[in-house]
Length: 258
Image 1 (cartoon, helix red, strand yellow):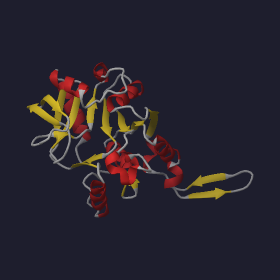
Image 2 (cartoon, rainbow, N blue to C red):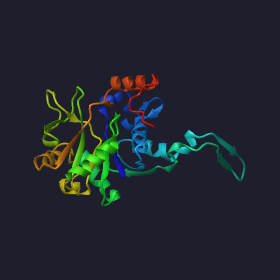
Image 3 (tube, helix red, strand yellow):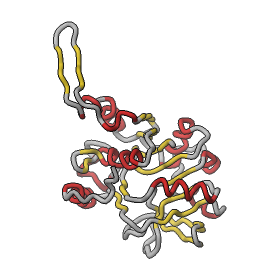
C-alpha cells in the first residue's frame, strides 16, 4: 500500500531549524523525523512512499539521492577508473521513494491532489511529515476496509492546537480546525484514504485539506475515526523537538516499532 507524506510546509513555528531545512528533515536522534515516520510504515510492511515536496525540497532530494553513500561503510578506488564498494546494506534497501515537486505555496489539499496520479486506483495511506505515533497502522487499515467510507483518520487525545473531531460512535460528524478549547479527540493524521478522495479535492492549489474537504467528508458521513489512546506527538516547536530527542536518547521512544 502506497504512503503519501506531506513534506512541503514552511514550518514557521520551528524557525530555529527550518530556516535551513524543511521541517521533515529536522533531526531526532541524528535522523530526520521523516525517516522515523517512514520507518513506522515500513515496519508495518508499507515501503512505497510518495513525498510531496515544497519548501527546500532539494534538501530532501539530496538526502535520498545520497542515502546509500551516507549510511554505508565504503571503499573508494581513485584514478581514471574510479570505483565505489559499499560494505553494508541498509535495512531500507527495499524502499521506493517518489519525490514530487508540489509547489512552494501549495496547501495541503493541493499537494494531496497532485500526488493522486502516482497513487493509482487503490486504497492508500496519508500523513504529515512531522508526527510520530505507536498506533497500529495495519489495524487502522483493517478498520478502514470494514466500514466502506472514503476516509479514516487516526483520532488521538493530546493537549494542543489541532482539528477537533465531533464523533457519533466511530463516525465523524463535524470537523473543526484548531478550536479554542479542546476536550475531545483530535486529528492525529495517519489517515487511510480511498482514491475517490479526488472528488473532494478541487483543482486549486490553495485548497486546505483540513478545511473544505474534511468538513465535507464529515457532513456526508464519509470520515471515520480510528481511535488511538497511546503515544502520539507532533513536532511543531523547538520544545517538542527536544522532547522527542530526549525520548529517543533514553532508548524508550514509544514510536520505535522496528
